[in-house]
Image: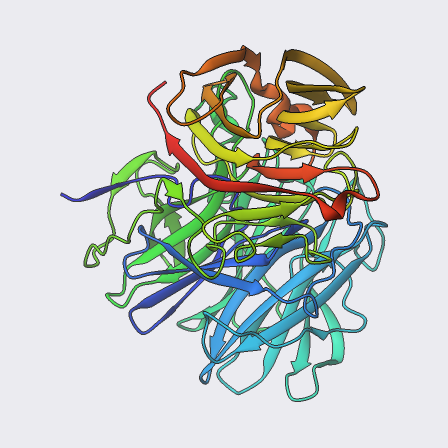
Length: 522
């Protein structure tokens, strides 16, 4: 019996939405303030996923200037109809106003169109449904027209969409307010037609520990919808906070070409206590049907870390290389910027075989577009290293390696000039306040940096060159500051390279010869 390990997408890949086209599977997830937006993956077996790009990879599609942490792009839905791929999502601005739009492509690897913004489309988590009669429907959530009866009471609503004009038409119809009203936060609607029934799958209970997935059905797309008496069809809130998989929710049903059913959903793996540095990840769980209702993981009803694999040809994908030597013409899709990159502050060609980051006055400690390129932390225990060529010239010049939850919670192992002293420092930033945990004077122009985590014990090292011995800077720092449970928000931790300086800093740069990331045994 072939088995697989969950999560199928480890690290910060929340709100999965997936489709099958023939025997190909495609999946997207939320991206919040990171750019490019909406990573997209391909698979043949639902287990092994390869990133083929991002849906929103041009500034004309995604303006994240000044966006606050955990705002930006929420909960995309991916759909396919008549040769065209659709991705619909919400852009949440700094006032928490929600702006819904969709983009299209003939090839899921891109390029995708500029956004079609939808007027009078309140709420979050939009989805599209293409009915058999040719009509297209939009579903989302909103404050109930009659008002909220309890905190975070939301309404799932439906309206026809004229795809040709990109306009919502006809009346808005309230179709369901969930199975667990006291659980609140009805959201993430996905509509399916299976047999004679329209099924409405939603998330309830908020995206924290009480998260859950519920379902309703109707013989008419506009309802009335009958909630399943067996709801919730999936949750882990009853398993307690010590269970290895928590906050399960936001599901997507998908049928294989063999007629089997599966569900993709988000969940987290806390460690070192109830701390979720990895954010909300993507998990896979089997589904069966009984009396025209779905049963998730029959006989168990939970998401497992190891389970029987789908009945599909196992199709492994090439693993990401441990080391990126920055010798390709483009950045690998694993890399992200913070917010939409503005200005020519990075280059793969100015110093061939290196990633050049020009120093910017925009700071990683503020809600700006710093000179930063990073990737997700995907393992509880890992090692990240980079080799850097950099000589700080002015007070405030600094460059190095950052482990980031948001602007107020981060570790930075940086080489820089502060108060006229050139040194390697480990900066801990929590609740917006910085502390120097360790420092050593240094005046060279080459440096190799290492961050190593064993669970929630994070250690930091340096050496002058790749042939020199490692020197400890700080060992066993408290890594829980990189969890949403300390820092708030909805994202997972990032690891990356950055450079910063004063207003004149753009004339100076740090060159990163390579970056490596690998899991280690804890």
